[in-house]
Image (cartoon, rainbow, N blue to C red):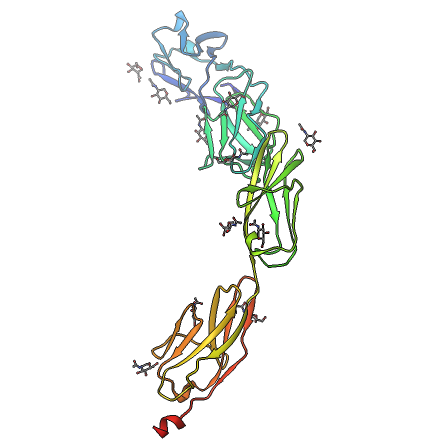
Length: 364
Ligand SMILES: *[C@@H]1O[C@H](CO)[C@@H](O)[C@H](O)[C@H]1NC(C)=O
Ligand SMILES: *[C@@H]1O[C@H](CO)[C@@H](O)[C@H](O)[C@H]1NC(C)=O
Ligand SMILES: *[C@@H]1O[C@H](CO)[C@@H](O)[C@H](O)[C@H]1NC(C)=O
Ligand SMILES: *[C@@H]1O[C@H](CO)[C@@H](O)[C@H](O)[C@H]1NC(C)=O
Ligand SMILES: *[C@@H]1O[C@H](CO)[C@@H](O)[C@H](O)[C@H]1NC(C)=O
Ligand SMILES: *[C@@H]1O[C@H](CO)[C@@H](O)[C@H](O)[C@H]1NC(C)=O
Ligand SMILES: *[C@@H]1O[C@H](CO)[C@@H](O)[C@H](O)[C@H]1NC(C)=O
Ligand SMILES: *[C@@H]1O[C@H](CO)[C@@H](O)[C@H](O)[C@H]1NC(C)=O
Ligand SMILES: *[C@@H]1O[C@H](CO)[C@@H](O)[C@H](O)[C@H]1NC(C)=O
Ligand SMILES: *[C@@H]1O[C@H](CO)[C@@H](O)[C@H](O)[C@H]1NC(C)=O
Ligand SMILES: *[C@@H]1O[C@H](CO)[C@@H](O)[C@H](O)[C@H]1NC(C)=O
Ligand SMILES: *[C@@H]1O[C@H](CO)[C@@H](O)[C@H](O)[C@H]1NC(C)=O
């Protein structure tokens, strides 16, 4: 019983009776393309890709299974005792070569394609490595061509590798040289997403890729006259609100990576509370207004520091600028303020002290 590259020959039974049958197996089993089964120095069967040939002496007594390399011998005689060997003649794996369709890629835009090949070797199985971890198929990662091709769609900055392929067959193995990917992606640095009119702002763009990039800037889709990684805007106005994009060009692949940011330029708001001409009279309707100048996103009202919610006597209209209490009650006495917010300001009005007037009611 002989060892073939870590495999051993295992008989179905041993010893055996004269006249019985035996099956010889290779353990662990693996398909072998080229090899011979021999008894001592006599060849029993030769197998080759697509077929096998039994020597005349054994014809009619043996059968060979190509896919398992299993050999069966019938009607055993005393003179069949001895040493049986299997000699694999797989060509060993040589020159495992990894190729990448392209290594300078743009994040999310590009697909990485790796192909693994060998100059010799059969019955190959492939394993892919990213650094030291195995690459397995997923929605972004596909293995094809009997696993000899690795495809990564929508590459990201984290797919940098190094990638290697490992090829294994029954008798040998080999690993390719590593290939790393250079995935370009720009990053834009901005302080805030909203600025007050009149401010000076600087947007910075950096692209993590080699070779050095050149830059372009766009505002609402229109190219600006700026080619440095910094875009400087002085004394900004409301009409500069919009989408700023940095495009980082890789001068080798002549392609670009793109990043977009919305920036809002807003004026500051001011706010005061006014009451309408009608004084606060018990059981009557009473209205307070929040007078806002400048852009405002949100207004709310507070009474004695507590947020006022809409209820069956309190209503808000014109974007909360108007608060109506109807009918007004003595419990409504207190200090009222309105607060107005936009992206750059947070304003609180002076307090309005409400004292519900009963005299007028009594005098009626
Ligand atoms: C040996 O194999 C032959 C052919 O497959 C079969 O006819 C015979 O019954 C087998 N003998 C024993 C002892 O199993
Ligand atoms: C050959 O071996 C394979 C794998 O063990 C098995 O599936 C198949 O049935 C065998 N064929 C014959 C003719 O015994
Ligand atoms: C990979 O590159 C080869 C030649 O460089 C080209 O023929 C093939 O179309 C490319 N494959 C893809 C999917 O881009
Ligand atoms: C490809 O690799 C997977 C594991 O990643 C394995 O399950 C599959 O059998 C392999 N396919 C081939 C044809 O080797
Ligand atoms: C590759 O072959 C070497 C001996 O040449 C062996 O030590 C190693 O375990 C094998 N690796 C695999 C994954 O089969
Ligand atoms: C924005 O408005 C200023 C005047 O207020 C004007 O000079 C400038 O051209 C405008 N910019 C754009 C992009 O419309
Ligand atoms: C830029 O785009 C923003 C958002 O789409 C829009 O509100 C703004 O009016 C645009 N500005 C100019 C000057 O086109
Ligand atoms: C790419 O840009 C770098 C730096 O600007 C320059 O040194 C290099 O020669 C350029 N390469 C090509 C192919 O234009
Ligand atoms: C990235 O993909 C978009 C949409 O498919 C395309 O418009 C853009 O030109 C691509 N950019 C590069 C650098 O290929
Ligand atoms: C009005 O104020 C209420 C709270 O009192 C708030 O839930 C609501 O979002 C505000 N609406 C606007 C347009 O400011
Ligand atoms: C208004 O709500 C108060 C409780 O918040 C309740 O006591 C009162 O009956 C309600 N009035 C009407 C007219 O629904
Ligand atoms: C408004 O500003 C005050 C003090 O600066 C702060 O306590 C409060 O949380 C701010 N409110 C909002 C909604 O930003």
